[in-house]
Amino acid sequence: MKKMWLVLALFLGFSGTAHAGIMIEPYLGYEMGSHTDTNPTAKTELVNMGARIAWTAPALLWLGIDYNLGVSGKYKPDGQTNSDGKRNTLYGVIGVDLPILLRGWVGYGLMSEIKFDSPSDSTFKGKPVKVGVGFTGLPFISLNFEYIMENLDKIEYSGSTNNDPGKMDSYMFSVSLPLEF
Image (tube, rainbow, N blue to C red):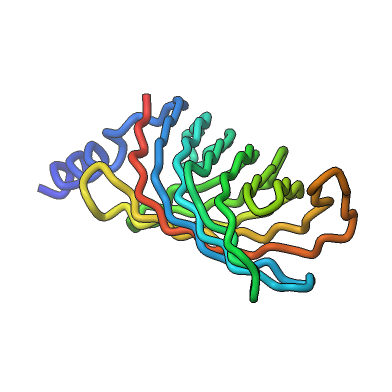
């Protein structure tokens, strides 16, 4: 009887196969944050869509890129007219899918550009870093929270350039569909 239980335990413990693969994860998110160290300070709100494409390792790790496209948004400087805006950011990401319905990742901005329209066309460029966590307890989808820290390199506006534009910090809530092949 002991041998039967031992064989059953070994079969259940080693029945899964580990393999590397590809993960494609489209997402839709809402980002809100602030632009500080400037005069005036400002609030930002962006609706983002994007996708992570990653190589998945057998040890629950994944490594890839994350492209974030802001489809619409607002830049709200204190005491001034609001501007419409869009984000265009590419991250290199590394993450881990934990067996307890959680996942986490860290991303480094390889390219980041946020454009705001009227009253003056402005382009913010920087190198963001983001930290994210996702809850995977629902079928097929992941509910995600990300904190994005961006030290801006420069702001281009109305033919001028500001090389000390401050920093932007924001939070993004998103829903994603992680698909593994």
